[in-house]
Length: 468
Image 1 (tube, helix red, strand yellow):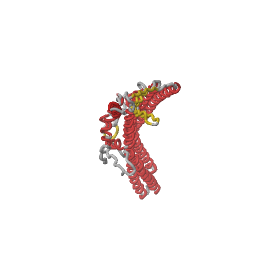
Image 2 (spheres, rainbow, N blue to C red):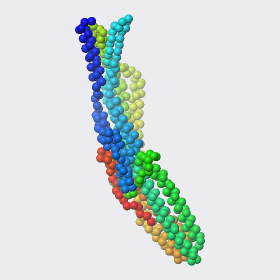
Image 3 (cartoon, one colour):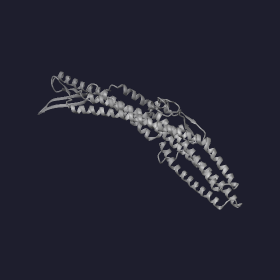
Image 4 (cartoon, helix red, strand yellow):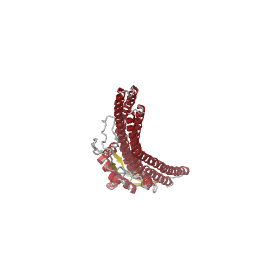
């Protein structure tokens, strides 16, 4: 073999090696949806998981505002984190789906007693025109759905914290009302004893107050015991594990402010509700899947070549292959499947709109009902019940009424006070649920709200509910 032939072989091998190095450093062409998704992911990551670490959580005390507890839950709750990582993974899936298949290094040789031919080569598959872009659109729509799931979990977490907080707060209110009533019964027992000593009352009157007091004491104990369950729910809403110590509870009552007089409020809910946005993304995914199915009619290609480095002169062996999409029934089935999936997604979206309308009407009614009950209780029923108790007690002291009438008046007042506490809790939870239905972004007063396209209703501080 002369030097010229050796040089040709060396050059051929070098060209093949350069081709391999070039391919190894290749990058695919990004799609518009991919670029937008990565930009969105970078913005959310900067706030939610800067450098893939949990940001510094607020230090919670009884003096901390409710918004600090909401922020703590958003950054700490594992379900939110799981949805975030699912979304981040789906963004990477876009790149995978739009990328061309990896090239293949081939090697062929002929051996007939001696090696007569050595043919290294390179092959690559080329999907049919438009297939990669269509698959990228499917992955992009799936990523959008994951994004809305992540954002929705933020709102759900905020709602979970508020609901658990309201339940704890109004449980304490119930205990307070019962304790005040227990003190009232103690005063009535002293009155009954005094009446009994003067011969105006009976021992039965004293026993009735003691029976009522014992029943109320047991009720207070049951309420106090139920606080453990509510504290466990509050702790879980913050994303704390069983090994964590119980968190403090905000000492200052905070109510969700929402203007329910706005006639366009339901239209806002339809436009911003994250669950509906996720369903819309599912429709887009189904439409993109339909395009992918239709592209199956287009053949795929494989191109490449081999070089015989042992031949003199060097011989090139180009190769080209093409798939034959001849199974028309399979292609038709894939298209039909995609069409049915699209119809299913559209039906789910319509069902979601119907469900949203029902939920909105139900929570709005619950809010209005609680407001009406509070108005009647504060303006008429509770003042009259207190007046009735005072009048009945005075009439008993003068001997005009039985002690049983006093106990009945006390029961009425207690029931009305507990109804007021229940109406307040119903009002606050209904407002929180309506805010969840309407809102299309993370709650305000949190670091994540700055990047949201919309915000939830702001919060306002109110005085503690009135007692007896």
